[in-house]
Length: 269
Ligand code: HEC
Ligand code: HEC
Image: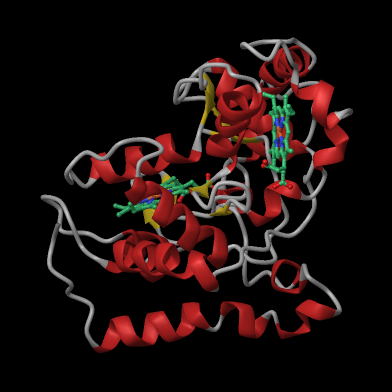
């Protein structure tokens, strides 16, 4: 891990980010205030127009191939309990709003989970089935199906209580420079947000559109895959998808996204 090289600047940036929920002070009346004011935005805004056009049209968005398969899986019994998701949850619409609060500490097990891990928790504990593999079509599709139920609803992460240490760990990670290029996530997604890096305009690096269909991947991909790409680009030590580091960073950036509407499934170049 690289040394912390944010001094006074870091403090300023940190104060600015810490002010996020504060400038969403109208949050009680309008949870989407920061989004409407344009202070907070996703890669949809900085992305290229053709990706936006595809994202705007569910019939054109290839992500829905995965969503359709996941809808079939939702009603398919699996595991030793012989149950399907639908047997317990009924219509998938019953999960409306659920995704906005993840990652969080799971009430049933006390473990810290994002949506992917919660789906796998149900598979293991409730169904007696094997967890879906990281980045498998099944896990990507089911995660997208679950998050889709919250589309348009503001992200709303709780960073108090048992979640606090994950938030702190993720924040620390975000502002720590690392890798051969000695860069922190914040260098690109806060300090240089809006600037061009080669042909790409740097966004705030928000998580609210994931899983995303990326042209470069020619498939749907998870937030952890995207973060891993950024982390590998700065030639930092490789980290595991769904591992603790990325889970912590996901917590920090999901909190930073407070008030941004869930956009899953987004489309990016
Ligand atoms: C050298 C600059 C750089 C660094 C450092 C960097 N990224 Fe990125 N990141 C990019 C670029 C370029 C993109 C694609 C354009 C965009 O959305 O900003 C991107 C995209 C993203 C996205 C997708 C946003 C969207 O709406 O599609 C996320 C999330 C993200 N980065 C998170 C991170 C995290 C977490 C870190 C630290 C591990 C990090 N990035 C470090 C350059 C960087
Ligand atoms: C045997 C019943 C059962 C089955 C089958 C089941 N679940 Fe669950 N699920 C629950 C219960 C009970 C909870 C809430 C308490 C808990 O987590 O134990 C829950 C919670 C969840 C949550 C979190 C909801 C929230 O508001 O935080 C998600 C997401 C979820 N399940 C997805 C799934 C998916 C996807 C499947 C199929 C792969 C599935 N579940 C299968 C019983 C089940």
